[in-house]
Length: 268
Image 1 (tube, rainbow, N blue to C red):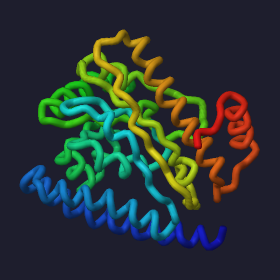
Image 2 (cartoon, one colour):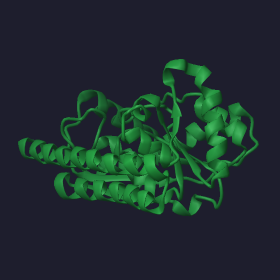
Image 3 (tube, rainbow, N blue to C red):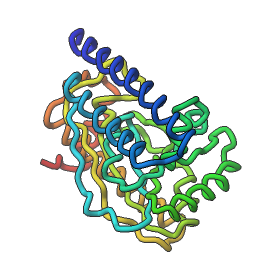
């Protein structure tokens, strides 16, 4: 555990340091010229290099599948959110993504300027439902620019196998934009959890699932979204557990694994 803690500290030092430098570069470019091919290339490098650092320093491998389910043209990518890994793992597969992020991040000098120039959409979570019209207006503009909207429907990172808590933002986007939604299941929180002091080795996996077509009622849509994401996220968690987890598994998480095993077989 001590060695893994040291490896994690080295990763955080490199990740935070690089992010700081890249934010200054991209923020400066954004102030002068806005979005450019160079700025997007730097953003892609940032995501790819972070995943490489994760693998080299902490032993976290990345596996992404189901990209064939992403349609051409505008859509909403709605992903489970357990880790910062999710942002980097989805980035290269989303075409021109417009991530929905909290307003506090947009207010950070350089970082926020860079995020705006790279099509990120801000949402003021303190305003609750009152923030939705502004978010939808930005999303409409992003779709018109050829973006795919990337949203984490639960609004924040959740612990693995935690009770799902889907917010209304994704429902409003679905009803307003009239584009298909691609659910994404993942298990990254088993390796790089929220506020984790130690990042544990293993294979973090994300899976793009078949699209949910536009035009459904809100109730039917959210039920299909939840069922798709949660069922496959549980399968991915069970798969990782069956392959052996390096991290400690406490009594609460163990009981959740045991309950899942009684409900469904492990996917090989």
